[in-house]
Length: 586
Image 1 (spheres, rainbow, N blue to C red):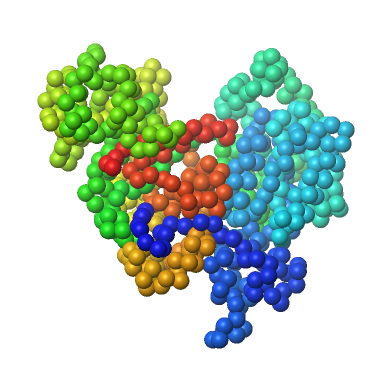
Image 2 (cartoon, one colour):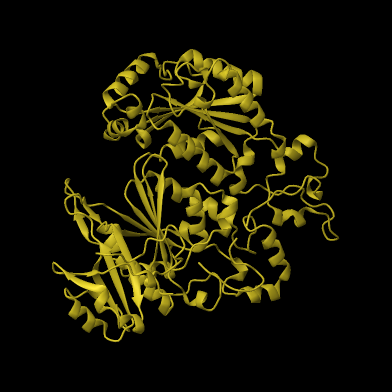
């Protein structure tokens, strides 16, 4: 990841389609124009205009993967169906996020529960009509996703799709009224699956019905009415996907030969509603970054190596040992003078006294800033001034003061996990293949864990993943922003217009990075173990935006602080808790 001053910003804004009157669109019919005007990026428009050396230019350039949603020539409605409390809403939202972010599908969600009542079925049909015929879209929306948040409540709606007759009606209505295709996604879950049992017990509907047993009674009643999509040939006229026990098995019918169907099937074969934790960290400062150069494969600077030491401490305490709180603070010489009154002995440990607000690092106004020292946190590790490794903190305050001396010193405080509730968690580690990324994790510990079946797990086993590499700057690799602006000032203007679509000469655009992250996201969605990803700024911006459902057009402008870990914890129901730990150095 890089940052530099100069006229040419080094990381990327949004791609905007050319205006309808652009020269590139001249000569096309209205229908053709509506199909292609979203197929290229704004930074290409000047290449599509006639010039002295090219009076007959290519009118529409070849499509790029990041804009592959324009391949959706037909209107498509994806309906997510199944028994109640099977995660239909979760799957629908994840699917929309994936299709929009990676393929530009411009999809919209429609909750059947918002269209109940005497005229509910007709109202939902009209809402779909307005969506597909939205004039503000220029080329018209092509993709909608239907789901339920409460299948019990929506049982009488035709759009619930829980019977053969309802599914037949849905297909005919969409084809006849809207000229749209119906794709069905049925979620099937084994009744005894542990996740499903816990999900039902803790679901808010259990409280509404009085208790889990009463809810189960209603579920049994609905089950008698529900007819799964038939595989005996009577519903082969439908295009459908069956997702069985979430990412365990996928069955498709007449879907894999289509652009949309193949991508939906692959994604649904990976996504799951289980709890999932991801840690994102930028690589430590590199020698090129210290010189405001972009790209390249330079090693870490001294500051970057210092971050690598801190990152390893975080990984050991939080990712591996599941500490409930973590803070890495550097105490300067003046603050070191007051350490005695800020530390206390407590049952063989040294703990913090009071809240150390004056040592809070990073953005202190960030609501997600979790790297604070508070009353009772244990001092576990110290990094003396000039030392090249952390060491265990002394078990008494006097020993700590002797080790600190005149300062400065870096201190690690943690709130350990409760040993009575602690369960060993397996974790994964991904980095890019560039040396500044691999050096950023060089100090990680990788203990070997033996599991019940005799196999072993290497904790935080390191995977170098080229798909996570820095955005390739092509001819500009190794240059500063000022040097680029002097050589080709027109490039700064192009990039300012189109950060998402602008491609460095013989290099990459953000769209190119999105395309190579697709495989990584598919794998990330499939894991249940925590994953720590140490990569570069453009990559982290895109991963963070995707995970939080932020439109990709906003990704190039996201601020991700140097030497900071982003801790993203999903509860399996679409809720996210975000924490940020600034580790330093400044």
